[in-house]
Length: 157
Length: 127
Image 1 (tube, each protein chain N blue to C red):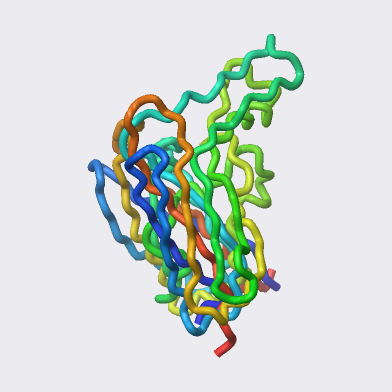
Image 2 (tube, rainbow over the protein chains, first blue to last red):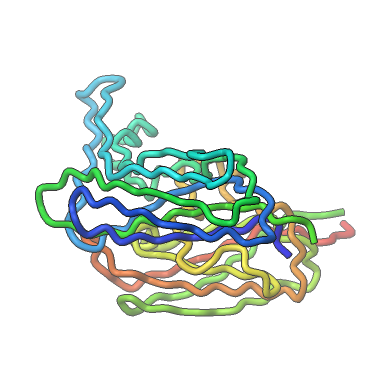
């Protein structure tokens, strides 16, 4: 049996400022929750454009990232709220290549590691509760799916 | 002595919202699977539209809806570290099964594209 497995929870967000409360069932053979990742896929609407790399900006010009939403996860066990993270669109990856005056960096060309956030939470409690709050400030209507990846470590069998 | 070897398996996505399952065979002399990597001839489509399930020897390592972007590496990652580390799992019967799902996404227009699954393996070698 695999020692590490991932559970995926997907949420559809179709209204501004929407709040979703959800439960995730953790299998009985789980020993620990060891990591959390998040991703999103826009179904309608348009993401804000990434800033283009401009050599005139100087050595370091930072751009504000776009906040999409906030996630909190809590266990019914003693650990209570064990994870809180913002889902963001990174607008500063353009600094990853200073030579790119002609080849404009994109997330899919200059992505660095996509590792999960490591955590260690006892998985004795077989249900965890989550809350996701939409914070996307788009003026046009939008709809997207948030995927929450919960990595667990199984007991040895 | 163990020798590192990379295998590449391709699937072709030809229709919008296509779902495709394909099973590939690893060579019989492969003794461990160390890592996985996804790339494409159209990286933006794979990054924004792709998700997949991956099984090795019938064991699921990534479930349905696991986004492809989480298994991609940009050019900022050094070549030796681009693979998702599986920690040297046994190839068993050598079957690698990928169930790929293309999903329509706002702002990314579909054109046919190739998805390449790279598998980092170790083989037994006497040389």
